[in-house]
Image (cartoon, rainbow, N blue to C red; front, top):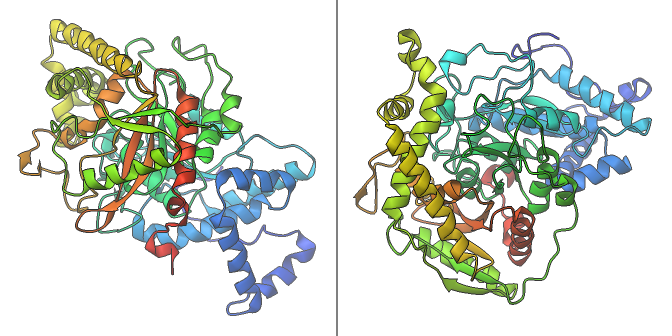
Length: 523
């Protein structure tokens, strides 16, 4: 295969839309300004308005071709990506249209590759992807082209996805603002002057702007949850072990970060989870449940169910004005589906949970990156946030790690106690609305100074420490610039399906979510 990072001047995205006998007629219809162009654009708009689950069904019925699907999404990407910078390391269009034509040939023969048959997909740039440059946003890895896929990538490829490139991330996925020295900054789908979130910022923006039908991500400190909330879509952090990580140099100690799905509808999130999830012998804690159950119906009655609202942890977490008001208003959706919403309290201090999370993050992230730090030439290329994590790791003692591990256990038990009373607990997905793209990170919130690059995302870390499933859902728009924010719906350990089911009910109670479109899609 040619270098996928080099542009191809040859074939149009529309070249493979039709069989050769009909090609000339199609080109005539597609002439600029013709009625054919209007029909083609109308067809594209129809395709791009569909959710992933509906697209998959249309492909299987052969009401839609993979070539049509690919062409519509590539046209949208060509139009909007230069402004928003969500998809990087793009694969040439002629390669993609040939791959889509092969999917159509398989479909004509009754061979469907899987639930993502013919789907254009941009893999998060932290996930090794065979044959496509995978940089993690770092100049150290600027020219890295893996020879093998990671497990989650191989599962998406095996399910029929066609990889169009990578989705942009912050360097080494550090921080919830997707900028890096290799590709630059990704801009929010709702306002390009503000941040997209991260580290799955590129995926969230590409999804919100309909450049792709689905997005994959990963999450440690809110990397799936915050960009979902900031771009008015859904992002799911699964229970630990639901989506195994492989290959991994530490299959026992790395239990913080996990891959997961994003979608414009909860059932689309569940569809991608059904592909990503499932056991793997390389991951000793991977869960054995059949992942196909996530692709089934999410309908479930919730009358009489109980929601515990954790909010800002009784004022312990500073929040930007408007965040709490927007999120508490969104709680009405739970009441509309018959649930009871009550104020809840974790029986641990926010400060204790923060200290636990920071220590264990040093231990996890620093261990991953210290090899670069030990090489002076590569150390010079690391951003300050990476050096902060590595030097924090170097300063740790074994006793500190042991005490933090015990602290993590207390966090899990604190949540477990809450779930004796509540079916789910709910928090904001971030403590601030999207901030200006020129800022690295918020230095203060509501007059309180932030002492690290990730403290403003403190609201996500107790859930990470507990290893619980959490679905980020749109909460609404607020703040001085009327920007999006989300809620985290958190369930008991391994209750991933229940979290998706209640999230689906929440979505149905709030039809404004599906009707809301970013400004570029309204013109």
